[in-house]
Image (tube, rainbow, N blue to C red):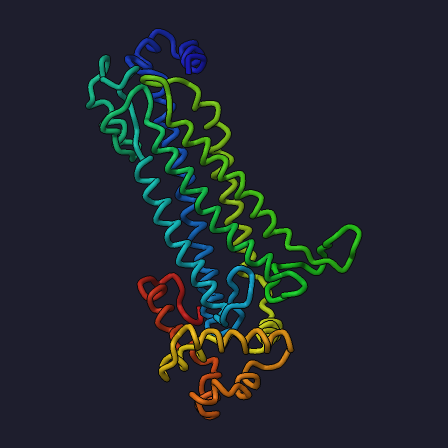
Length: 370
């Protein structure tokens, strides 16, 4: 700042004595920094809206597309691809809220002098300048704006990056050859491995995953910057010159990649159906367990009977439906007709509309058919 003022003074002449009168460098630098952050946040918020539109469009398309839900990496119960996308959409809503709140807290200016006490200029000057710039005056400051504001902003960016990483990791997992349910975009002229021409590697999602690690590191740096000596030191400055441009540009790039993946991904419904069948319907175990309990059997007893048949069906590679019909303990409680009624996939989709209404009805981001 001193070098800048010296340079300006050479051109302005005697009136330069009135420039920066009573100010400290951070009055200018931190206030200008807030404007830069505000501009970048507006770009990022627009990125979030764009990704949310893509997620919603795909969720509506695949509202009832059955796929296997997995917990601990193991087949659990069927869900729908639309519901998985809806979970991500809802999380992006929260990211938008976090970033909006962080922007509100950092949308401030500070022109209060060397230690923040307006010793050499009136508070009215700060109010006047901030109003002109569209910022709020900081209620209290030292020589600088306090860095909890900046830490909140970078942390919001990092959390948003974590959501993108979660999306990318799920798609990477589902693109495995053994799964083959979702594939990220792969152009006709694109190459995978330099050695193996057959490869279609999920490099876009892997790129998102790697960049999210950088954002988390920047969040830690931003929190370290909160702790400065007395009314300020300069230890935060060098770090901020790296982490703020990198974090904002990085997330913008990641959002663009994620939107491309969601918009142009391949959804392999046949593979989804085939993967569901690989469990031999043992995922229907909970339906059977509940039915046996409702018939009066102790839950622990029913659990052991159902578990025994489920494990046996999977190991022997026979349908769970057929296995349990040969079990005397089960037949003593449930008729064949009652058992057949249990083996319906309808229950996995019957409440989809309720969930979609909870998530999508409050907004108009997406219009059916648009």
